[in-house]
Amino acid sequence: MTNMSKNAPLLAVSSPIATPSTFVSMANLSKTYPNGTIALQDVNLNIQEGEFLCFVGPSGCGKSTIFKIMTGLSKPSKGTLDVFGTTPKEARKQSDIAFVFQDHTLLPWSTVESNVKLPLELRGVDKKMQQAEAERVLELVGLKDYMKVLPRELSGGMKMRVSIARALISRPKLLLMDEPFGALDEITRQTLQLELLNIWQQDKSMTVLFITHNVFESVFLSTSVMVMTPRPGKIAARVEIPVPFPRDETFRTTTQFNDLVREVNDALEH
Ligand SMILES: Nc1ncnc2c1ncn2[C@@H]1O[C@H](COP(=O)(O)OP(=O)(O)OP(=O)(O)O)[C@@H](O)[C@H]1O
Image (cartoon, rainbow, N blue to C red):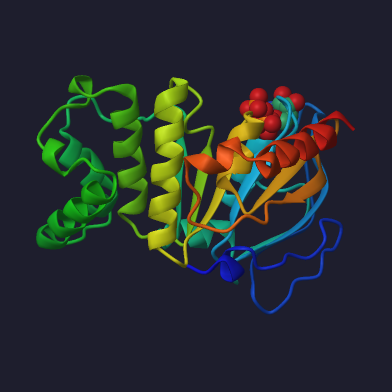
């Protein structure tokens, strides 16, 4: 993937107008829960295909609420959301959206292979195809030799790789990741960040939205960081990360990296 396509310009955060190439479009998206909590207020965001957006912000600023609305699990109180020209619910039905959470949610009694095949099995995909796709995604995450192993025999990082493989098996257009590496140690976390970038670069059309509390992680991974503020939840700033891909560990040691981290931190404090 060229740097150009990954860094395709978005409209300004405040603009609700979508361009013809807009992949996901949120216009004045608001959510008030029945107890009166205003989780989101007038969020405007257009996302282009192939972007890697990170969402950072303090606890309670509405990051997960955006994801819940994007997957059709929660309805907005106001505003509109268009996901590749359809509704979030329809996109989810077509397996165009996949998720990865902090908790790997693997079935403990099923092998790695069975866990990964589950989304295809539920859709009635034929067994040969299930096998081929399981091998493909386990190869991608470096776990092809662990197909017959049970989750309890794996480390935390390996379980997360299986969870990512299970999400990728449906070849989603949009991958939503909610603090996926939050429970991992720093070294494993950094390794998985690199692996995730490699996977994303192999599938030029997959768009990734990634929630994290870790500013360093957001700068390392993304094409843009969406900085959110709470009460009510809003996108306060969008920080572009104009650094070409592929990125490697040396990026973390550059002045540009530190400057971008500072820029995100400044936006968080305002
Ligand atoms: N089902 C619900 N009913 C009532 N209030 C809710 C519900 N879900 C979330 N909230 C509230 O909405 C606000 C936004 O929550 P949300 O989980 O989206 O934030 P977040 O940024 O993802 O937080 P965290 O980083 O802690 O996961 C919070 O004040 C939260 O308490």
